[in-house]
Length: 398
Image 1 (cartoon, helix red, strand yellow):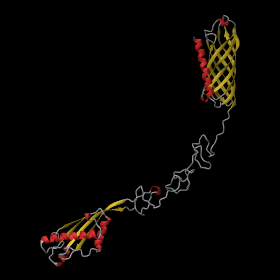
Image 2 (cartoon, one colour):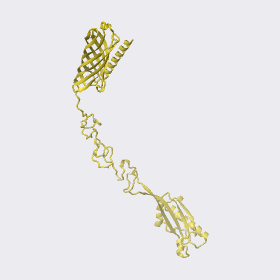
Image 3 (cartoon, helix red, strand yellow):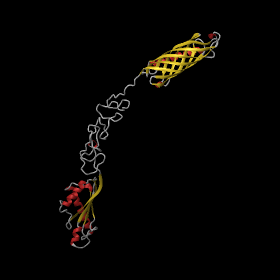
Image 4 (spheres, one colour):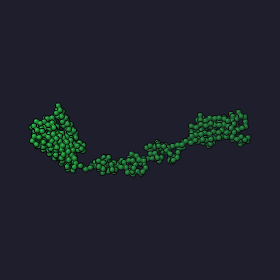
């Protein structure tokens, strides 16, 4: 059962190596090698006595010649011949030979190699052995390698195991000449350092093989259609200056107010920034004695007042009617109310001001401007007065 298990394990190893060989096709570091080594051979203490004709076989040594061929970077095969001398208790040293073949697997960068194969040993009697081992080709010179190996052997006919250690020299043949560095895109930077391997012909590149930006506008030379843009200039995707027709600092493509007046501040959309200011206008209109008629409805001051209300349509006004002191108090109150109403009619009928924006109130003789009892005092007290206040937006200056 133990022997069958070992044979199955060896078969699986051969099948796995065959599959891996089919997948690996990389170029080997060298194509073949020839070698010579000294071997120390250690025999199993339980090696059957009948095989040795009544005596015992002990450890020995040999000289091994090998020739190997590498199919790929990872896989190789070799043939091996060993002139072997083993100690035989019945008759001294016994000379013989051991020949066989191995499949070999080289680890990445030839760190180590694993091998397994079949050997035919003929010392006193012939026997067939399966072997597994590990080794390395050490670089000691450009054309010489040091061989070191350890191997285990199992006899297919009898249940015993031997071991060997091998040290020697190998001469590689067909070593691969390192290929010259390539520059696939002809930009002067070798492929192994080129971080931008598809640079168009004629484009100036840096040490990494990538296009540079001579004018530092954020657009690489190979797409920059305006390669000499002055420092600080805003540019588009082609490296050309962005247009700003109204010179407000916001490029046309983002300017929501393209005709901003010169000298005013704008926001990020190119529209004027405003401050709010309160403006007001006060009007006083005088009346004849005991009259509620607006004598000069087209007076420039009245026209200016009406224009102000049109410019600020959200404003409202209270028209205050007043009289002088002479006369009965009730009469004067009625007269002041009629004066306020008369001025409202002028605003509505002649200037088109919405009546809902105008309120009238009469104060009679209760709010005299001049309390003297003379003609001038009476003249200035016969009046209407109105004040309108509005909030206006004034553009901020730069």
